[in-house]
View 1 (cartoon, rainbow, N blue to C red):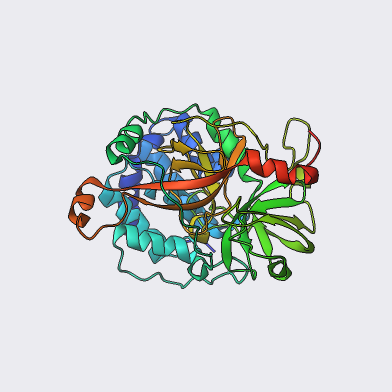
View 2: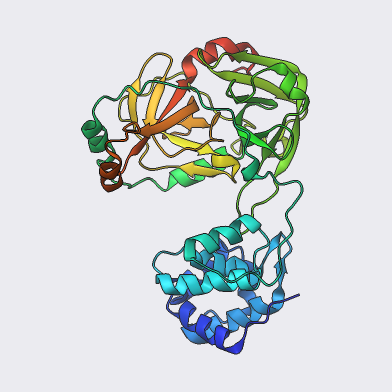
Length: 397
C-alpha cells in the first residue's frame, strides 16, 4: 500500500527536493538513490529530465510503491526522505518539513527513529498509525549494563587535553569506511535475557566472543545470554532485528574487572560462516599485540546505550598509556563496554571497558563547563596482556 500526500505537501516537497544539490545532475541522482537503497527505480526514471520534472516523477513513483521488500519497516518514500533529514546542506526548516511527513504518514515503522525525529525537529504532531514494536528487537530503555569500572584519568592538564583534541583535522582516508563496514560484521550486542542489552562484544574466532567481565560477570549468566549481530540502522530508516545466537553455557574464561576485565564465551554456532572466503572475511576480527603510541587515533565500533551499531572515527586520540590500561578521547555510553578498539589499520588493539567526563564534575565550575564544554576520557584494556591468557583458544595464525 502506497502513501498519498496532500497536493500542497507534494508541491512543497518538490520545491524542497529540487533545491537539494544531489538532484541537480544525473550522476548525483544515481548516487543518492543508491544510498537510499532505491536504485531499483532507476530504469523507470528519466535521469536527464530537468530537476523539477525528475523530482516530481520520482515522488509519484515512490508514493505508489509503498514498503520496500528488503526493508519492510520503511516505505520507498521514507527511505528517500530519511536521507534528506540527515543532509546538513538542506535548510533546517526544509528538513523539519520532511521529518514531519515521515512522522505524519508513518513512513518508517521504527518507533525509536520516529521519536528521534520528533525530538530533533520539535515535531508535535502524532503519526497517523502507531508503528508496532518488534518483540525480538532489543529495547535500549531496558539497558541493564553494569556500572563501568572506576578508574583514574592519567591526563592531568585540561589545557593539554584540549590541545590534543583541537589538533584533529578530520581528514581521513576513504578506505577507513570499507574497513569499518567489514569489521562491523563481527561486532555484536550482548543481551541477557534476550531483548535486554548489557554491552558490546566481538568475534575473536569463528564462534568465540570477547567482551568485558563486568558485562558478563560469571558463567551462570550464560544460561540466558544471547548475542545479536547485524543490529544496524538501514539508511536512516528502521533498525534491522539482526541475527541472534545463543551462548554455550559450558564455556567461560575471564579476568576480573580490576585486572584485565574480559570474558571469553563460546557460541552455539559460527555467525559469519557464510562470509568466510579468501580475501573476503576471515569470520572474526584481527587481533594485535602491538602497543599504540601517544596521540595515535583509535576507532570504536559499539552499541552505545544498547542502540543499533555505531562507529567513532574522529576526535579519538590516545592520551595516556600503561602496560595494562589505555586511555583515549572518544564518544561512548553505557552499552559500549566490551567494544573493540581498533587502530587505523582495523586491527583490534584494546577492549573498551569504561569512560567518564573530564574535567570531573564540580559544583564550582558548572557554568564554566557549559561555556567551554567537557571531554569524555575512556579507558580500555590493551590486547597484549589479554592475548597471553586467551591465545590457546584462538585460531592458529
